[in-house]
Length: 96
Image 1 (cartoon, one colour):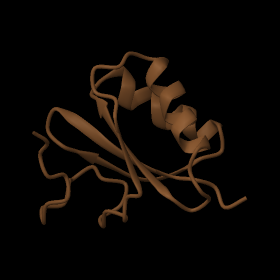
Image 2: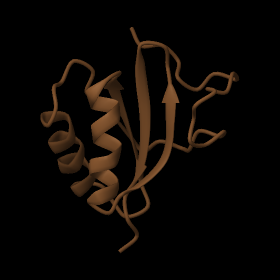
Image 3: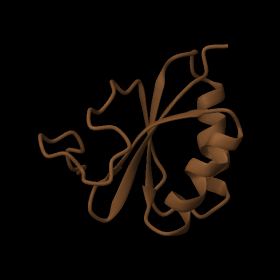
Image 4: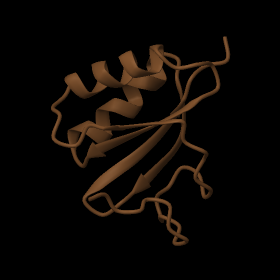
């Protein structure tokens, strides 16, 4: 099944040392670019302002491209956690 991403060990490259409360999880491991960005953005558009979406992304192009694309689209990245083999990206829906 899935591994726990919220262990007591802090990821050395995490953008935030404390994981945020996650409202929705979206597993996009194995999903190519730019489809993973499109699916992430569509999910964020269905969420309420202030809610946090956790997106599971592969290493390489997905984790390099999706956070930058979300930032350019006006979304706030709360944290990026290295989960050994994939990354957990936490993004917050804008308040307005």
